[in-house]
Amino acid sequence: MSIIGSKSSAKSRQLTIWPGALFLAAASLSFGLARYDYNLSDYVVRLAYQLAACLLVPAAGFLTALLTDGLRRRIPPESTGQSVERQRRPLRPPLEKLRTLFLKARHAATAIDWRGGPLTVALPLGLSLTALYSLDKAWKTYVLPPSAAADQVTAGLLILAAFPLLVVERQMAGKEFPEAKALNRLCRLPLLVLLLLAGAAGLRWLGVGWWQAPESAAEIAIALVAAEIALRSALYLFLPLPPAENRRSHAESAIAGLIQARPPEIRAIGEAMRREFGIDLARSWALDFIRRATVPLLLGLAFCGWLLTGVTALPLDQRAVYESFGRPAGVFHPGVHLHLPWPFGMLRPVEFGVVREIPILFAAEDGTPAENSFQPTDDPAAIEGAPPAAANRLWDSSHPSEASYLVASRANQRQSFEVLNIDLRIAYRVGLSDEAAQQVVYNVASPDDMIRAAAGRMLALYFARNTLADVLGQNREKFIEGFRAELQSRLAALDAGVDILAVVVEAVHPPAAAAPSYQGVQASAIKSVVQVAYARGAAIRTKKVAMVTAITARNSAAAAAAEQLGLARRDLTLFDGDEKAYLAGGTAFLFERRLDRLVKGLKGLPLIIVDHRISPAEAPTLDLRPPPVINASFPDEQ
Image 1: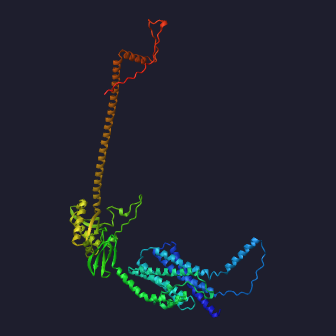
Image 2 (image 1 turned 180 degrees about the vertical axis):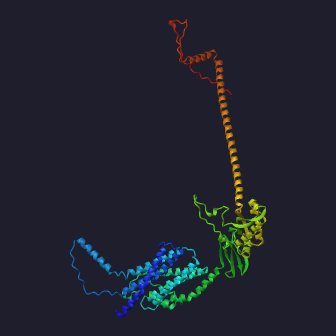
Image 3 (image 1 turned 30 degrees about the vertical axis):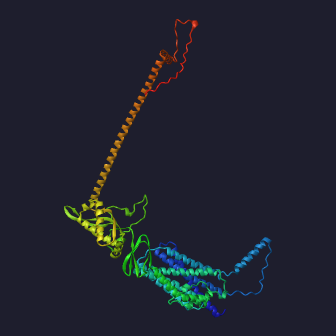
């Protein structure tokens, strides 16, 4: 190697090591700030992820170029003959085999050029994948727009940070070592990203609505370049490696080469394809055919796309007023429709059957629109927890969904005014007829604002005509029905094409001065209702107790009467049986019955029979056993 070549190689090494180290350090710092919790805002976290992603890409290029340049500078040692191995003490056969395997593995490991081979692939592949991961985290981090001061500071810092990158890019543009052009193209990526992010912050500060476009373009550019480097690194594993003196860094990007002030030349693209992949685009008949067919094909696609503007598919909840050459030609209902393409035929969409509910609110003192001043929350409250703020109905606290009006009142024998708050909502929909759809399209700019203005005038007129006592003591249902009918008639007179479905009065809150008195009236009314309910419950309870007592007495008397009747029927049956037995047996029955009673009466008593007619030699035998039972059937007594 000559002295000039060594000096040029050393200079290229200095030009790659310091920018690569700085890019890697800045990217690591940004990624660490975003990855770990340092009590930073979501906007700073997302910006740190974006900066880390755009800095990791040039860091991969510079570090890979440094490794490739070091590989070219290393000259392999020349062989001086056969190497003399050191005499080793012989071992036993198993140990000798293990030593042989170890020596072979060590020789294979030392033969691999780790810095010139695997590391040049793993380093750009890992850094590019890390850049894609950081970009993915930035996409998933949703933030609200920051303050104007934060946008100003962010835009200024990003523009200042672009100057060092511009210096590095210009230095790479004037160098002659092999990786200079590739590194020059990679330096354009963070420079472009910083300018786009600064432009997004500036547009957001100026209040421009499409400030997300530059930020999205920056993220897409980072993703494309990082994906290209990762794909090149993965494909490099399957390609044969060139000799060390001819090896070049593969951490380059053709997409980054498109970032330039002038449009890319076709000749330069063809030259890059021939140099990288060996494809000569100038000799390809397919590319020549594509070149000749591109313009007619694009024109045909544009014409077909223009014709497709004459095909419209409307969903079930939508219809459209069709204008042919600027004049209304009908109303299209849900379904697929064919019409003249744009601009000869145009459709103005209209809702079909969608019911909307709006609160009657007006702009706040700071100019906030009514729809933004009231933002109800849908957070569910715990069963045992505190109720949500939307459930607060106390009169002494303000409610964002209520409008305030002046109402005439009488205090201390003098006329005065009181402030009354009412929470009123209106449910409406666009009329279902075709005429109503055309009226909404051509006569109404904003149905919500029109209904809110008409209802506000009606409420103001109503409260001006009625006193506070009339408003608080009126029939709520009658007021709602009359209000809905009058509002519908006013909208019909304006040809608004809107149907008022319902008027919902959530609450009417009296002024703070009248709140205690009216609350006492309500408490008395509630107490009277509760007492009436208690009295009705006591009366029902007393009646039920009397009914239970009467039913119990009646059932007891009926049971005693049935028992007495059963005893009487039993005695009657026995008497009838004895009478029939007497008629059939006569004295025998009486004698048998007498003996039966005698046996029952004398049972268990000692007996002494005295009779002078009985001699001791002729003592009779008395049979005191019970007589046999004679079955006799008698007719049932009715």
